[in-house]
Image 1 (cartoon, helix red, strand yellow):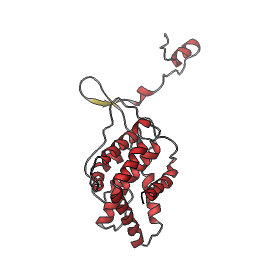
Image 2 (cartoon, rainbow, N blue to C red):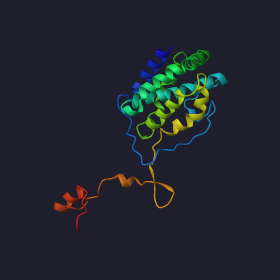
Image 3 (cartoon, helix red, strand yellow):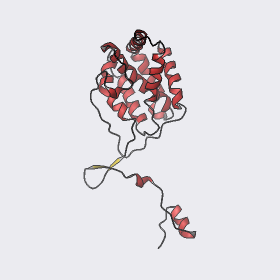
Image 4 (cartoon, rainbow, N blue to C red):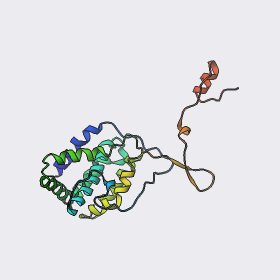
Length: 218
């Protein structure tokens, strides 16, 4: 069952361009994303399951978090210091019973709703919802969550998903770095600070100096 779940993740994330790494994690200050409990059925979690029972909604929350960590393992494996693949495999092994039960419950939902291909389609959309092309904080945040999940006792993955899903969802969004500027307040850094020099209208030696970062004499 564990191998089946991992292979399902590999197939679904292939459409995300899994071979390409997510953007680098370069921050002056660590990202801080919204946190707080998320209950089963909350639209924040991802793809809805109409008329789901409480048990099915719980399974969807569990599977959404597992899907996000699966995307992390595939897209963030190039940052060796994160140990993304090893940590994800550890989560699968440690919480295997709860994950297998969630997968079975989701399968029963689509059988009950007479949608035999629904699980594959729903899973693919769930993986796509963790697209990280514009996020710099996803890899760091998701790998931290995976490590935290390894520290939780078996049978508590659902509780962990309730506690941390909001943070994982937030990490998919673009993050503006922050730095201390004059006092204790953290302020967003303007995007222009990372832009190259503006050399419009310069020629000759002045243009060469500008392009190499030397302020030309006026």
